[in-house]
Image 1 (cartoon, one colour):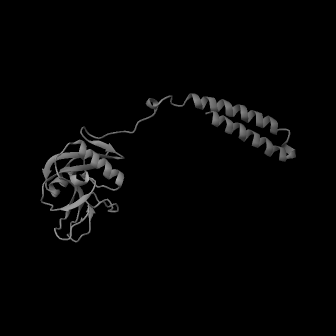
Image 2 (cartoon, helix red, strand yellow; image 1 turned 90 degrees about the horizontal axis):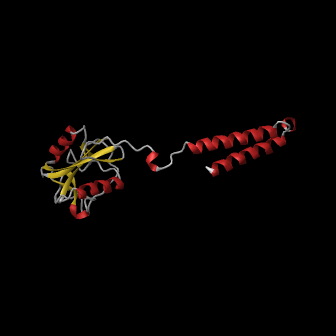
Length: 195
């Protein structure tokens, strides 16, 4: 707050300098400058007194995620160990707080999802995410309707020889890279829904 006080005093002095340039108002300028300086210092002390004294006084972000779900940004993420087909898994997520299989929209979000899967201590080689190719034409879409801009394909994926139309993260890439898989395969999955 000391820096704030210095700015107020500097502003008051600049005001005095500006006033000195205008001869007709020169008699009032020193009075205005002193009054402004005193007012600024008084307000600065009051503002300093009202600041939080520690982090515990600061408001925390609301986390309205249900038990077992983890918050990241404005969404909740929930790892499900049950092994379902891609379609069954997405339906499961839709029935859970109107969510979908997770859409991974950035590298940071991908790292968060990978850590969530690793924390579950799953032994699964693959975990479903919400990316799929509904028309089997190699045009990928997130089941949530989010734009497909960020990509994190594993080496050799998507496959041109053994094509899959649903996407899973793989354990051999620490669950950070994607591989296209047969949609009827049964894997654990991650749901994502609004917080």
